[in-house]
Amino acid sequence: MADKSQGRAVKKPAMTIKERRAAKRAKEIESGAMVTRRKRAERS
Image 1 (cartoon, helix red, strand yellow):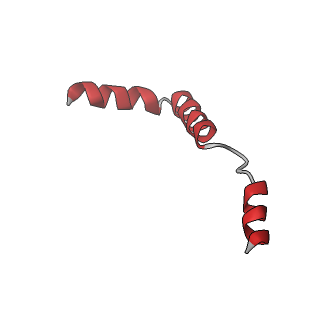
Image 2: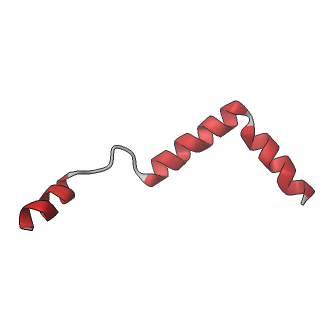
């Protein structure tokens, strides 16, 4: 049991949630998905 919890603590995610979100946002801006989303929000 102790070994398992120790291993879990050592293992860190390659990308944090914040980093993953930032990368997603950058991709959306590049593809132009961000613009269409903004337009839709204004309409409703």
